[in-house]
Image (cartoon, rainbow, N blue to C red):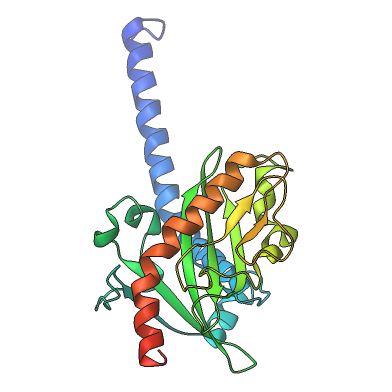
Length: 238
């Protein structure tokens, strides 16, 4: 066949595309278990950070097994959903559903001081892409013990600041219920929250849209748990 003919060039191009696609598919298949494991480790690090436990890629699995003593999945009525693995729930898919149809994962920690914390995952939207995080609550079901936030593609120095300790530490001790035990979440206030306001933190300077997205994320993701929290408090414990 004439190597300069259009037919030869077309067949050669098709064969190269097929070969390269097959190679990429093979490599992706081989690497997927490692990618899945790395994602699992990162998720465990984020959960641990929400209960103020520092970890890294080498220590996360052992520390997670030490501190996370239970998990469950509930619905917005506060009912337990049997047969579901909280760690495997895809929160991004769940928040796209009506609230009454969502599976709501909860993680339970036993801290070194003997206290128990409930850890709630969060998923929302920033300026350029998804944002997510975890909030841990004391056993009063209203006081934030720790917070961990992260993002996919927010602007460095602006919206990306949600994953810094300086921003996250503001949430410690904040209340998601008001004095009448009504759910109010935590507001992220542009220009700065009032001193001693138990329901507000300072927004990120120059990161208004990301700050608003985080505020919406907390409200939308925490509110569906209120019936479950009320049941736990009524029963006097987990």
